[in-house]
Length: 481
Image (cartoon, rainbow, N blue to C red; front, side, top):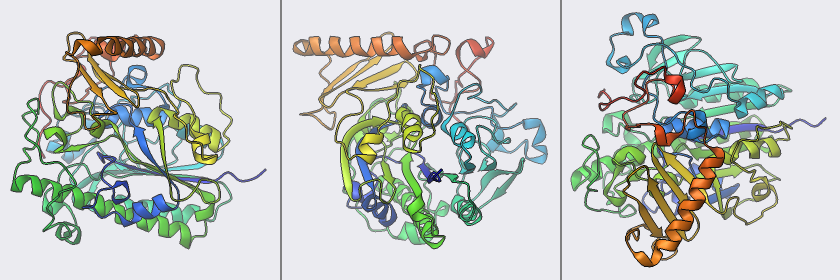
């Protein structure tokens, strides 16, 4: 029996699809992501399942939508056992922690499938799906962030069941994994989950060489627009020099992360396993960095926004001799397709649950097919839901709106909301009908997002019928560190 390929899965945090040089951004420096794109296939139309970290990450792993897995907001509580933190219990990092919660308990993830097929599964970086202390879902090696976000120079790290603070970057542990696993007979799966380029974007949070790289940048590749009227009060106000400061920090975080990716690619070459390794690069969700006057992802506004800049993510796949090099595909695919795709590409042979909405895009990768994996893409964040085709996007907010309709083929930047234009009422009705039937088919009524009062301030416990009648979503902004 032939050995299956190794899998190196690189996941970034809040990186818009626009934040790569190879995607057309002439300001940003991403030589290693550009190198990876040249060695593989880059997707122009890849979407997250929800424009916020924890729900999107849960969908990547399980193939479920938020209204199936029940993670509807970023996890604010349930990562750590506060009683076990000792002297760290009073640290402001852990103000919302109480007891560990396994938010994905009972669900099948693709790392589970890999472990069942003999893969050595290792995590280096952000988990942010509850219970950060104990390895789970197939992972036998576990080096993660205690909560979710963290200071770059003071990361709360969980290793061997213990929490400590350190400044070492996630790349270092991933390189150790590659050193240790490269010579073994069994295939390995190393999942590298960067916290970059999530805030903070202060200059002291990033290596000086990358900050200085953007010192005199005018940032013409990102729009300079008036602040959005629905921008939340705690969001940055990126106007004038403050706009440049924020973008400087964001771009520096991307470029520093890119350097880490370069080290990973070099290590695969050094250990002689580059040809035997499938590499996937993506981000959990997109990001508005002044786009539409918003500074933040889906919860940068309230009501939540579902602009393409928030829901489109970078996606690059490379596997020498199997995936075409230097190719850009226009195929529309989603994070909820990943579990089916890995099952097919890696020949795992799993019988996946019938309730999963995704479809394998293996033919796009392995056969160079140029066809949409989905005629429509669906997205959700709380009571806000989106349906998108190549030509149209409709956003429906339950129960009372406001709703949005964009004619993408003539308005790709989503500037003109046509929802009040009666001539487009039949199009809106058809899109809503499709959206309603799709969610009727796939949403689990026990955790349906349209019944959840998601605030954007964080999720405190399991949703819906699993909440035991307790408040699920925080009602105040996250504490500032």
